Structures are given as C-alpha cells and as structure tokens.
Amino acid sequence: MINFNVPPYVDKAMDYIQECVKNQKICGDGKYTRLCNEWIEEKTGTAKCLLTTSCTHATELAALLADIRPGDEVIMPAYTFVSTADAFVLRGAVPVFVDIRPDTMNIDEKLIEAAVTERTRAVVPVHYAGVACEMDTIMEVAGRHRLFVIEDAAQGLMSFYKGRALGTIGDFGAFSFHETKNYSMGEGGALLIRDGRYVEEAEIIREKGTNRSKYYRGQIDKYTWVNYGSSYLPSDMNAAYMYAQLEIADEINNARLELWNRYYRNLEPLRLAGRIELPTVPEDCVHNAHMFYIKAADIRERTALIDYLKQKDILSVFHYIPLHTAPAGIKFGRFHGEDRYTTRESERLARLPMYYGLTLEQVDYICDAVKKFYV
Image (cartoon, rainbow, N blue to C red; front, side):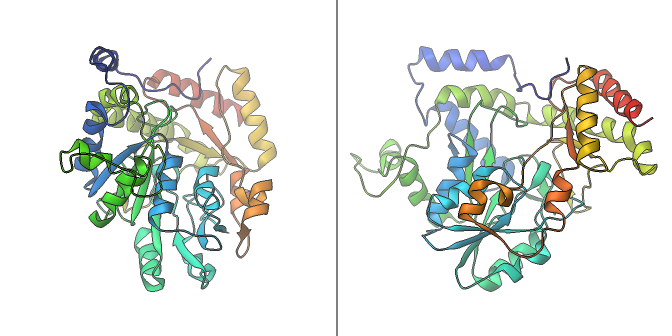
C-alpha cells in the first residue's frame, strides 16, 4: 500500500531527543524550541516566532492579540479546516464565510469587501496547498477598513508571495507542524508576529498569563501572574524532532517539488484532454509542494477514482467539507453571497500521496493508475 502520508523523519532527531532527556529538559522553551524559533525567524523574516502546541493554538493566540470579542465578525473561506473558525468562535465571534476561487481554492479576494460590516474585525486568508492568496488586494481592503489580517499559513512554510514568506504579510500568521505537514513535530505549530509591539503580550498569554519569559531572559528577578493566558508551549522533545528536519529544510523542499513536478508532467496529458484539472500556481507565488491534487468531473467520479486507486494499493483522500455546511458552521457562522465554487470544487478534489520519502517510481505507478482509470 502506498500511504497517503508518512510523517517526515531525519535520523538526527533521535540524537536530539535523547539530548533533551539526558539534560532533563523536556518541557517547553528549551534549547530546541529556541533553535526552531530562530530558524523560522531567519527564514521568513518575521519579527518574532513563537512555537506552539498546534496551529489551532497559534490562531487562538492571534485572536487574543487582535482582541476579538463576542459579536465581532471575521471573514474567511468556508473551504478550510475547522481550526480556522474555532479560534474565533471561542472568542464569541461570528465566522463570515465567502466563496473561493476555483483555480487556487483560496478565498476570492474580490468578494471580501462586500462582506465587511461595522462588526468586522479581521480577515483570515487561508493559503491552501501552500499557494498564496492574493495578498496585495487583501491587505489593501483590510487597511482601508482597519481590519486585522491573520494568515492561516498552516500549509505554508517555505512558500512565498512576491518574495515575502507566507505568514509574515498580515499582522499575524500561523503555521502547522502536524504530522501531515512538510515539516512536523507530531503535533505543533507556530505564531508569527509582524509588529514587535505585540511580542511581550504574546509571550505572557502563551506562558499562562505570566511574565516568565522575561524571567528566563534575566530581565526580572521573579515572575508572576500579570494577565489572562493559557499553556501553549510544546515539549522541547517535539521541537527537537522537528529541528532535525529544519536543518535540511531545503533538501526536503526540493525533494517534494521534484515529486510535485513529476505528478504534473505525467498527468498533464489528461488535463490537456479535458479529463481532469491540475493545481494552479499563480505567477507571483512560490509554492512548497505541500500537496498534489486533481479535480475530477464531479463527486461521483471522484468517489469512483478514490475507490479504484485503493484497489491498486494507493491511498487517495478528499479534503475539507465546507464549514458553512457543517452543523457548527450553521450554528456559529453565516455565508455571505453565493456559494458558486466552494461546495462544487470541494466535491471534485482528490489528493494523491505526497510525502518526503515517496519515490519517483511510486509517483509513476500512481499516475499510471490514474491514467488507466480514465481510459
């Protein structure tokens, strides 16, 4: 069986984890947490990176820093993971869903302004598959209406928009390091902060409402409870596992891009014949090969394709059920405008296996199976 995903692993990870254990430093904000933060800051150019227990928690932190309150509205696509909305629903806010673009599966930037009301506080673009949203337009609309921009860049590390790293363009950005991501710590994430004036408050919230981060840096002689907060710190062992990957991040990225390009070349004849659609990467975007998907004619064809691939020992999956159609989405949010593409395109999309360690020969086998399905 060719699995859909295999978590990335680098042999050095075990050495780094053993070092944590031997040094009796396995809680948060240890050596490897610091090294991961510094690596991400250098790679992306963000003012501050704070590793968290998940992308969900990173987004929750951003919602707290943006002072999202009950009754506020937050604009986002419905084609996303539940965490994008949960972070704001927990604050009592209303997710306002708008339609997506069919080419990139990202929020349609042209529909955002019409969804703005006097209650709107933030826009949350989701960079699907590590391909950037049209951020210039989004930032211009947000600036005109004085809205926060919180980038859901869960899939976006090593991706760029006009030379800027995803997660660093808006006020805040959130990465995911779940086991399905390009770089993984099992469960984990990171908050990126563009404006340094939010850093101290973020550190306090992340450290259970205490100023312990300043204490660790020797800036104060004792720490105390100074604000509300929670525990968003991952174990340093998790960070150690991931840091081994970050040390060879370019190698991992290049290997994934080679697989992605192999998929595209092999399946392009089906695209040219009008049998399937392939991913679109706009000219201003540099993607990270987070996933490779194809679009079938409709949900019936997609279901048949996934079943056929399973018979060939290939695990293919579909992705999100649009949030506005889910029970919680109906309860907590609303869809603004027409659902022209969100549901239709989500029902066509099938994801093919993609992970560091997948071989070119396996990609060829998968593509041959897809071709045979369409014969």
